[in-house]
Image: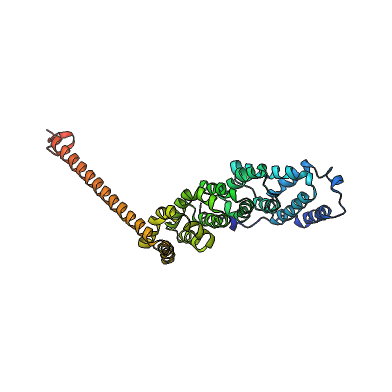
Length: 345
C-alpha cells in the first residue's frame, strides 16, 4: 500500500547492546588487525561461521547491523578464499527474500557491502557476476519494501553498467519488467534510477531498448501524480540523455507526442505543463517539419477516434431503440410477460 511508509517504523533497540557492542568491537579489531594471520584464522572463521554471521544481519537493531556490515566487509577483504562463498551466501539470502519472505532487516547493509565488492570487480566481468546482476539484483526491484534499500540497490546496478555499458539494455528491460503500476513514490524512485543508468548508456545499447522504454516514459509523463510526471520530464534536463533522444528523435517523437499534447491541453499541474512545453520546444527546434508531421498525425488519429466513438455510440443507441421497440411489440399491454392485468374475481 502506498500510504504505508515502512521506513517510519521506529527501529527496535536491543537492551543488551551495551554488552553485545563489546563483543563486536573486540572481534572487529581482531579481524582488522594486521597481526591476524588469515591462514590460521580461516580454521575458525570458516563457512559455518560466515553463515551464522550472515544470519545476524536480520537483526532489528541498526547498530548491530552496522557492526556486522563492517566486520563482513573486513572478512571479505582479508580472507580471499572465502570470497566466492560469501557472494553465494548473500545471493541465497536475496533469493529467499525476493521469492519467499519479502522480509529481511539487513538487505540495505548487504547491498552496501556488495556496492564496494562490485566496484572492485576486474574487467571483463565474469559470467558469474553478470548472472548475479540478472538473477538477484534486478529482481530486488520487485518487493513492495524496495524503498528501504533502493539507494544501495541503485548504486550496485549503476556500478555494473559503468563497468560494462553493454549491460544497460539488460538493466533497463529489467526495470521495465518490475515497473510499479499503482505506487507513485516507487515510480519516482525508478525514474531516478533510470536516469543514472541512462547516464552510463551508449547509443547502441540505447537503441536496443528505446521503444519499450519510451512507451513507459510516455505513460509516466501523462501520470496524474505530478511528481511522477515531473520526474519523467526532468530526463530532458540531462544533456547525455537529451543527446541520445535527439539522435533517435524520428523513432521516439511519434511515441511520446500524444503524451506531450495531452499534458499541454489537460494536465492539472502548472509545473508539469511548463516542463512539457519545454520538451515540445526541444523537439520543435530540432526539426520543426517533423514535429509538424507528428502533430498532424496525432490530430488525424484523434479525428478517427472521435468518428469511431460517434459510430459506436450511434450503434448502441440504435440497438437500444430496437430493443425498446421489440419489447413494445411483444408486450402491447405494457405488463410483464404480455399478460393483461385482471382484477381478482
